Length: 166
Ligand code: HEM
Image (cartoon, rainbow, N blue to C red; front, top):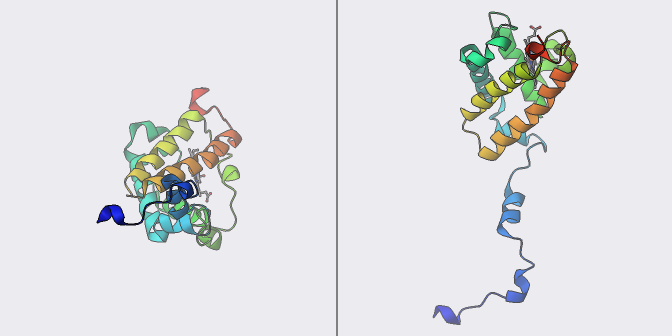
């Protein structure tokens, strides 16, 4: 009978990891090795993300302020951002391979990027990420990490108030 089976050792129960900690241990640690690159689906996945990002930038009214900073033809922007994100997520350094070294803040220093422009960029990313079907933890992680360079870009742009200062 069931009651005759081994009983849990109550005294030892406190040594067992609580379920939340056990899940933490099993979860991939984004940022370690190429786990983030793989979670994003490698180069094909990042290409899909960037395609969605620029499509949304084209369509979203609040993104018009940043869409008009870009060239009319987004082919090169797509290629550059895709390649950059592959390396940024610890995958292959595809941007440097084709275009040479890059520092994200200096690449934007000639632009007027204030809070509104930064937030429009991040909103396009958020919506693009939402379309990808990533694990929710990875989606949240990716957006959180992208806020860091986005804010850095704003701080070092030629006008960190952007359109809000006008
Ligand atoms: C904060 C808001 C941002 C805005 C408004 C913005 C806007 C732009 C614009 C207008 C360009 C084209 C520049 C040109 O044609 O001269 C550009 C290029 C680029 N952006 Fe951003 N960007 C932002 C943030 C970011 C972030 C956070 C990243 C990376 C995580 C990024 C990655 C790139 C890359 C790789 C290029 C190509 C640079 C080059 O090869 O010259 N951008 N961005």
